[in-house]
Amino acid sequence: MSFRPSRLAGAVLAVALATGAAACSSGSSAQSAPLASKDTSHPQWAGYSFVIADNGGDGSQALAKITGAFQGAPYKVSFARFDYGPPLVQAAASGAVDLGFVGDVPPITGAAQEYGFKIVGVTQPLHPEVADENIIVPKGSSIHSIADLRGKRIAVPQGSSAHGLVLGALESVGLKPSDVQIEFLSPAAAASAFNSGKVDAWSIWNPQSALAISNGARVVAAGLPPIDQTADYYLASDKSLNDPVRRAALLDVFKRLAREFDWANKHPDQFAQALVEEEGISLADAKSVLPTQEHKFLPVTAADVAAEQKLSDEFLAAGQITKKVDVASITDNLLPAGFDSSKTS
Image (cartoon, rainbow, N blue to C red; front, side, top):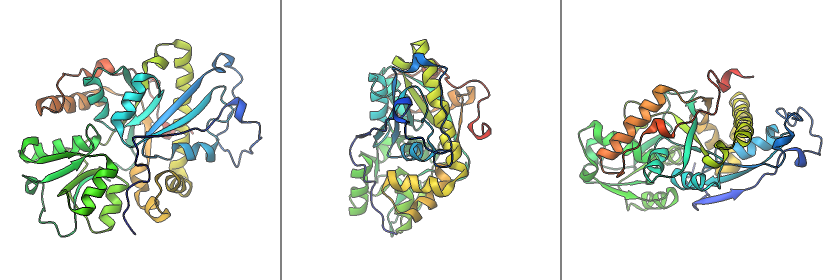
């Protein structure tokens, strides 16, 4: 299996998928659109359009087409794809994105820059023992442990969850960011630098990590507790949250998206095909990383806020942000208490 960076090399690629009442006149069958659900009880939502964003392709757009998750909704939905989290957070703050999926660090770096958004939900992995990101080194590298990273060049997207993994890994062996050479590169640029030997290590998520490992790269730090979180987060724009009617419609968007991914978890072949379409990887590669992509949607808990606060404080202490972030103040649960997407079907 050949390693190649995701085809999504730009900072953002907007990919529109018109859904809702105006786009559902084709009469898809329940079999071809198993989650289609006509909503005639909220005519006040008819004028709304929502943008759902992800990092590099999580299958959401392709799965929406497969499942019909938004067919019958009174509003319209489109999708935007970002190379990594920080630009997505900035887009959410500007109102260009209504609901976005990011790792644990982008909300912290975004809040430190006083962007206007809120954390509205969390996803937890169905397989928490499987790392979704790693610090890897090339085949034949003399680096065999985290401690061996001292003085080495580590490529990582700045402000991403992989950036948090680097800090956590270094701290676990008593190293500071100043003890290594951190090269802030986009995922595509980092892939090129890693493959050409311009950096010694790469902190990155799947599928890039898994594909590199299949070509002989080795893991020196797995993105698992205690050095890394396994939760990811959904953000929403203040524009959508501060209007009560629009907020209610956004909750419907969020619940339909959660149902879509719950369906995908139970239909792995279709989920893998969706990743092929969005990530530009082979079907075999998609199936190999699928366990790291299966999540359940939950409200943000006090434990999630505490974990994010701890990470934020570590970023501040390490000089990676310059302003203290109060995570509780940027959290506004959209999903109702007790919601669990794995138990909604």
